[in-house]
Image (cartoon, rainbow, N blue to C red; front, side):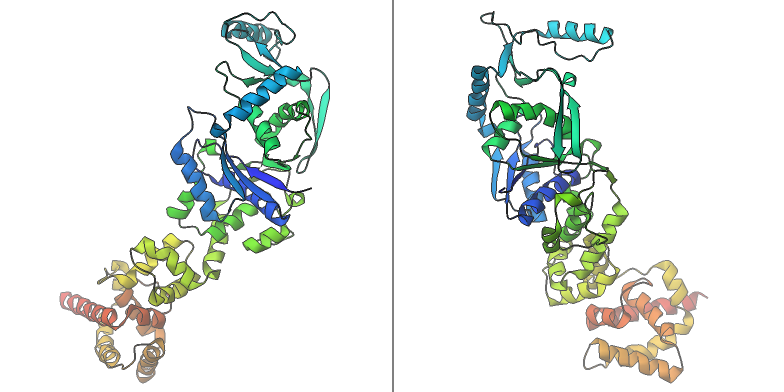
Length: 461
């Protein structure tokens, strides 16, 4: 079988992580089997559709690297095909016109509910031919009335449903516009979709859709209904992919890796490159049990990828956040920040100290480390650093080592006061790397300012 899969979002909101996972599973399955990945925008709900949402979906998928082989196709452009297929069903006797009014339907449902029955349409127009003229009508599909239907699901296994739970559903509204379940089947047939991989909230829809495939004389695709993940529903306000990228600073590699593991496993492996995912992904590894979104786990995966990426690549990603151009210096700064950063937001915040003209001393750190006794140490250290012919970490380190040896001090006794002086706080990457990348013109004035702070402290005592 030639694999052809599709991702078919409705443009009623941004691409949230749950939708992105559905897209990812389809994309990986297509790539794994040398198939075709199709994007279809299901925009027939005119009242709820938003153009900006459709654009955000396309942009989010592009950022994640899920390139499409065909599409995007817009259902709003395919009305002629839907009208043709509706007429085909009417002509074959698989659909019929229903003239029941809203009042009649409301009364019917009330009577059924009063009897403790499910308020399903009673098929009153199913076999009638006495159609009134100039009267609004909808078009309903003739569903099987009795018996059960068992479908083989690639994720859930065999699933059985009783047809008495479903009525003759509407395929075209009174204004002629087609309904969701109808256009989905028409599109999937027309696009030759071989596998429908979607959330298990569509499982009931599958039992509506299966007889429609058969009415058109077409085989059913392979269905795989993936359990939803708690916290990733658009209806529950799951954040968009763009929010994780822009506001939270996650990298695409981390997002893809984490989403792939939500409901899918491959042994005990947790970290996957995209290439590894393509080589390993299959529906057999998708769990039939629901999972839960874990932001801490997602952050852990993101940390791995942020540290594994090439520093020059990461520099390209954080430069816009800092309002600067990426260069070799920024790449070097990224390299020393990678082991201590969880997100691009975190890293950019730390990197800004390298580009500021001045800093503000953390009061608690300054009181702890910039003691009066440290003043003479700075008086000796500053000239030695000033005299350095080469401002590199080896030369800087040699000055500190010689100073500590001459005064029989442990490195921490002078390293921490220096760190506070040049960064403003007591935590930073390695001191010598930090001093090197801050540069001579930034470090020496900051050391002098810290020495003046110590002198003021001494005078106040």
